Amino acid sequence: MRLDFYLSHVTELARKAAKIAASKGRVTVNGVVVKKANYTVQEDDEIHLDDTLLAWPSEGYYLLNKPADYVCATQDSDHPTVLDLVPPHLGQGLKIVGRLDKDTTGLLLLTTDGQWLHRITSPRSRCNKRYRMMLAEPISDEALTQLENGVMLNGEAEPTLPAVVERISECDIFLTIQEGKYHQVKRMLAAVGNKVEELHRDQIGPLELDADLAMGEFRALTDAEVAYFK
Ligand code: URA
Image (cartoon, rainbow, N blue to C red; front, side, top):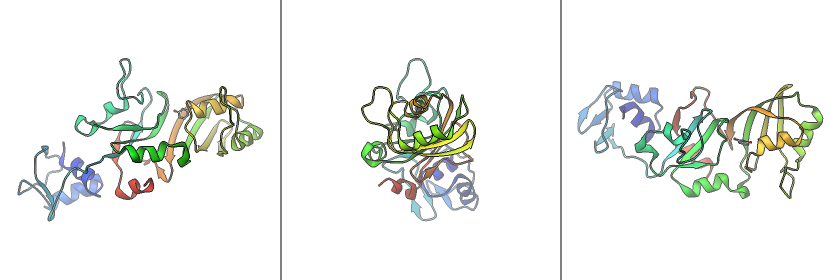
């Protein structure tokens, strides 16, 4: 693994700041100053930043920009899984926080911490998830109000919880919901006679997807971001 990648995972430094720290001679590997960000570190290397000995955190917390065509499963015989996007040494024990459909893109959290995962996905937490979508048909004000108030989904006994809707244009809206029922957003739009053509999640609770994180890329959460859900 590259030194700058390692530093950005185990410290608060972003990748660019990690490169600069190394170039300034602040990093040693097994007692030797290493200035090159692309230096390959090994699992048993002793790495210091200034005087601090670094270690992999005991739990991993990552944010991934999920591309279409990847499934949210640990294994799948027909499709690549989101865990294929994470290097094997980080992927061990990682669990997927909630599910996005194969064709849905955007913010997906991965963690080794089961309690943290539960706090986000438990229906009792009422954690907000914001989706942006392109619709097959222009959506009426009446349909938006129905979505906001709650709609009956096929096969469910209770209507959906109140939601927040923001119209961008005729066929382009944001929808923020607190539940995570199977195919919930697509079923909500079907319930008001529309169809979701493209679906993208850009926010979970206060955590927003980084504008500069390309599809398929991931990064470690900061301690402050992990603490949002503690
Ligand atoms: N709702 C859906 O219908 N699909 C998703 O992937 C996420 C929420």
